[in-house]
Amino acid sequence: MNILVYLEERNGQIRKPSLEAIGAAHGLGGTVSVAIIGSAPSAVIDQARKLNVSAIYTASEPRLAEYSSSATGCALAAIAKQAGADVVLVGATGRGKDLAPRVAIRLEAGYVPDVVALSNEGGDIIATHPVYAGKAQMSVKVTTSTKVYSTRPNLWKAPKDSATSEPAIHAVAVNFADSNFAEQTKELILSQGKLDVAEADIIVSGGRGMRGPENWPLIEDLAQAFGAATGASRAVVDAGWRPHSEQVGQTGKTVSPTLYVAVGISGAVQHLAGMSSAKTIVAINKDENAPIFSIVDYGVVGDAFEILPALTAEINKLRGH
Amino acid sequence: MNILVCVSQVPDTTTRINVAADGKSMDPAGVKFILNPYDELAVEEGLRLRDKHKGEVTVITVGADSAKEALRQALAMGADKGILVKADKQDSFQVAEMLAAAIMPLNPDLILLGKQSIDFDGMEMAPMLSELLNLPCATVAVGLTIDGTTAKAEKEVEGGREVISLTMPCIIAAQKGLNDPRYPSLPNIMKAKQKPIQEIVGTPSAARTAIVGMTKPDKKRANKIVKADGDANAAAHELARLLHEEAKVI
Ligand SMILES: Cc1cc2nc3c(=O)[nH]c(=O)nc-3n(C[C@H](O)[C@H](O)[C@H](O)COP(=O)(O)OP(=O)(O)OC[C@H]3O[C@@H](n4cnc5c(N)ncnc54)[C@H](O)[C@@H]3O)c2cc1C
Ligand SMILES: Nc1ncnc2c1ncn2[C@@H]1O[C@H](COP(=O)(O)O)[C@@H](O)[C@H]1O
Picture 1: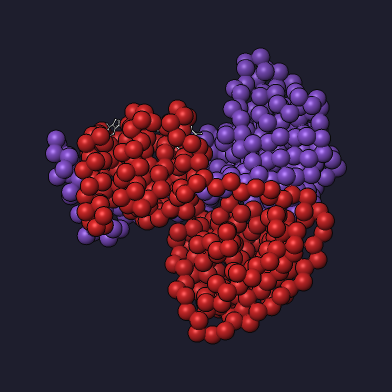
Picture 2: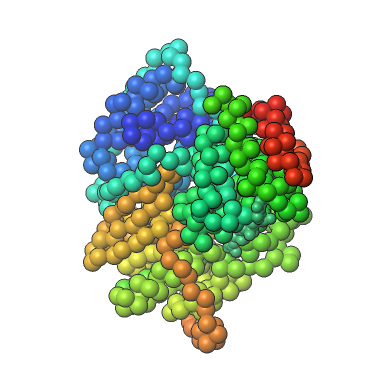
């Protein structure tokens, strides 16, 4: 089985969800190659050499200095054909979720989005995809010979750097159409120095129980102690206390961190929809009947304004700060 | 401006999902179906652009007869007419193909969708249509401005926002934050009943995926609850200990 993994880069670095997709590929067994697409992707090739993959395919095009999902999809499909890929894996990032369906159309392949588990059962690949906001899971088999999947971030281990073999490098010539550049990314505005909830390994989220934006330093202090990102419930975002980019849930972001800490959040189904696949869930709430407690690993029934400073001190102690 | 909005019908967000007897689909008994919440944003955006640039908003859905209800909800918000592509759909690819076939002859200036339908949470329809119709596309849009032959979309991405420029006609998939959808007024709900819904029969090609099974997540949680009972320090200490020694997350 030939597996091709798309390597997304940001600021000259391969993004973690792409590395995790390589982890998912290794789990399937087979030959793993990677695709690097950009205007001049040289820096990333050196990083990819250390990933212990059998081949690196590149496609470069000056116009890709401004990212285009359509052009990147065109290039990835061309590479998949040249590589004879049976499976194409894309990390399910914002860009990845746009890219994978395009590649599926171009390769006339079946596609399963946002996969949380991939297994090879005697040659049959079974993909697990959460549906109905995580209230159920579907196992799906792709019935075409080429198969495309996007893999949800934070669920697979990125491969460790090891350069046991030197991968073959193939530059692929792609026939782009002008229409591939009818859509281009002009700007990427990153919120300064802030860890995004969608990428964070640990998230501390606050809800209406925090009473007001002036109390957020309590959430931020705990987040800092953990090295975590901060999240929020919709009630808090709708009230204008926090930006929408922090909202976790059905109409916000879906997250799968190692640890999710919900503070003053009641646990409405729409909130749970965004975080119920977290590995460990913790809640701090003064109401012992709050629905959130029914899905937690650990909970503290108490006043967040008293628990948060004490917990921040405990975590700082444990982490030697 | 000739605006087309793709809508889907989904179970209400608070629905309890039960697996049907076949073991691979949702049991529809007792489930309330609604217009996909993201599609409300798409309809709203279409209505605002129509009011600004003049023209018409057509809403389209692929599904069974019952999906007409979703069209009626969009018509009640103010859309002008509806199209039901009647078909038994098995996967997104088929829906995209049938949508593309129905949309092609209409030559819309703008195609709006929701960023995802909250049943299968695929987020795939807009990029698929983009490929099938060969039109530029921006997804997860929280901002949209149209200036003659170009559109500018602001897209939410991890850690920030992207500004995307597109040539018209184009495809935009709406994310919460793009606008505040209106509630249909009673007179408009009545008026919607008179608005035309055209029915066409869709012919799905072979499905490319097969659902093998559907299950409810069965993750067992430790569910250890510590009561602070006035001693916040002791509770915090115990929680930190559990996270360190048991969950081993720190
Ligand atoms: C279509 C739709 C989509 C939605 N999408 C989302 C979404 O994406 N994300 C989302 O979060 N919600 C979403 N919601 C809203 C959701 O239904 C809830 O209204 C929302 O999650 C409630 O936010 P909350 O838990 O912060 O507030 P509340 O429900 O008001 O809960 C506050 C909690 O704080 C506790 N508390 C109060 N004081 C203290 C204290 N001193 N110490 C400790 N605890 C305290 C209370 O006991 C209570 O449990 C959606 C709703 C709909 C209809
Ligand atoms: N059956 C359908 N008919 C028409 N539009 C649809 C259908 N399914 C999905 N869509 C549109 O595609 C968007 C994204 O859906 P999805 O890719 O299924 O998550 C939805 O918000 C709708 O705008």
